[in-house]
Structure formats: C-alpha cells, structure tokens
Amino acid sequence: QLSLLHGMSPVSPVGFVHLGSYVAKLGDITEGYRYVTLARSLMDRVGSRESAGEVISIGTQVRAYIEPLQATLEYHNEGYAASMASGDIVQAAFNTVLICSSSLSAGVNLQIMREKS
Image (cartoon, rainbow, N blue to C red; front, side):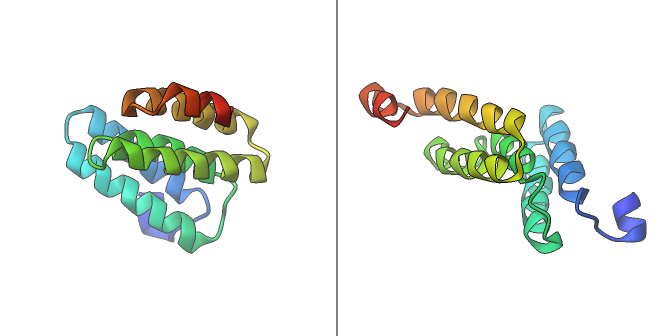
C-alpha cells in the first residue's frame, strides 16, 4: 500500500516479489507470477540493483512453475552476478545453491556441472 500511495521506491521490487511468492504459495501461481514479473520490471525502472539478487532468487522460484526449468538456470546466474556486484554474499550463496538444485532437477549433465564449479 505504501508503494501505491507514495510511489515506487528502490525497495518496492522486494515487497512485490515476496508478495508474489506468498500468493503463489497460497495456490494462485498465475497471480503470484504476475507480481514477480512486476517486481522484475520495477527493479529495472527504479534503478536500484542493491536488492536485485534477492528479487531474482525469490522470483525465479515462482517463475519455475510457469517457465521451463532450464530457463531458471540463467536467471539464477544473473542473480548471483547481481548479488556479488552489490556485495550481498548471502543472496549470492542462495542463488548458487538454487543453480545447483535447479541444474540437477533440469537434468543437466553432472560432468558439465562439475566443470563449471
């Protein structure tokens, strides 16, 4: 409500991505996906990349229910890079864990995964 009343701030994407994740967990994945997409769009518009790793990592977990799982691998790589650029090592580590788990679920060759690590 604050973003709607006072305009978007650099942390608005974080709020929208968490709302989207929560809505999806309640069972409305399509509506949750809409909030995640909004968060991703706002992240680019408000110009703050400090929370990009968090927005990408949380949002990609919802996107994985709509988009092909293989597509999420690139999102997590982007989230890792954004997290490292902003100095957020917690989100960088979270994106790394999600890259590994998503790669296994997507059927990526284990030898290829080993070579990348």
